[in-house]
Length: 142
Length: 142
DNA sequence: CCTCTTATTTATCATTTGATAACTAAACAA
DNA sequence: TTGTTTAGTTATCAAATGATAAATAAGAGG
Image 1: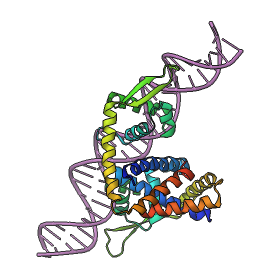
Image 2: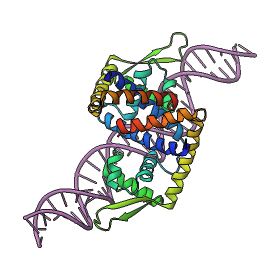
Image 3: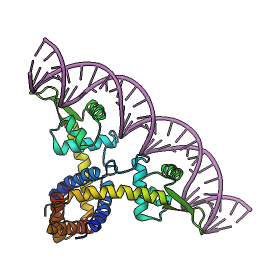
Image 4: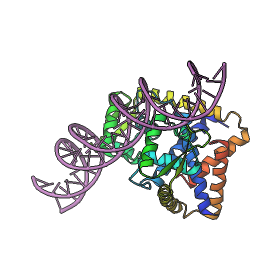
């Protein structure tokens, strides 16, 4: 297998993934939050409970900026900060009811666009897509 | 096939793709250009020749902002603007020599990180990855 | 020619994002 | 106790990004 050819295929593929993700998600998020705030909420939604440090690491943001954006999200009542009982320096971040609602709304918009996109796919196509995702997730995007 | 389950798989998958892409590309770009400028150059590199409108559409930026960033790239001698001979409103954007060099450098950094990532993959794994990319590109991320 | 549309630019502004230094408070270790 | 490390905050600043209005300039269709 020509690894360099595979690399170019990957570049083109990731660019497609980014483009399609953008099409599926554009305007799906509420106007009341910024893109970075949405990314944080998505990460929290999928991985909660998390700490500010987790968010900082995974989203590649500096702690002071993470802290500032968490404060804004908290002021908008989208997340809750809970002090860790054993180590009171640490915090646990969770979506609030409002935060859950906001993310559910966004996800359902994105999901319906996704369903549009695969509406012409046959059952066999869907199986193939499912398998391909599984393979790449395991062997390349781990 | 449960389409909702497939959707959740997709969400998790795209998030992995974004994370890994970020790992592969972080600090690969020259410090002399911004992230948006890098994205534009990458798109130009892969799709050239393109017009400012193409860039605007594909990168989801408003035309005035595209125009501004193209001017900056042009001032840095990374791209060339050529007026279309038939319709002189239109322009053709290409990477300049310097632009090619800058992108080749970035790509080679990214490629070597990619090779690291797949160094333990067997020949069969690579074939599988290749096939999976092909499938998804054709059936989902078109 | 005149009007309309298309492609791009210029100018301006608000907001977001990223970076850094200095700080608080709690745990931890000697 | 004292000094050190860890987790997070506050304040501040510069730069990047995004949005909008208004202009230019060339093609297209009557």
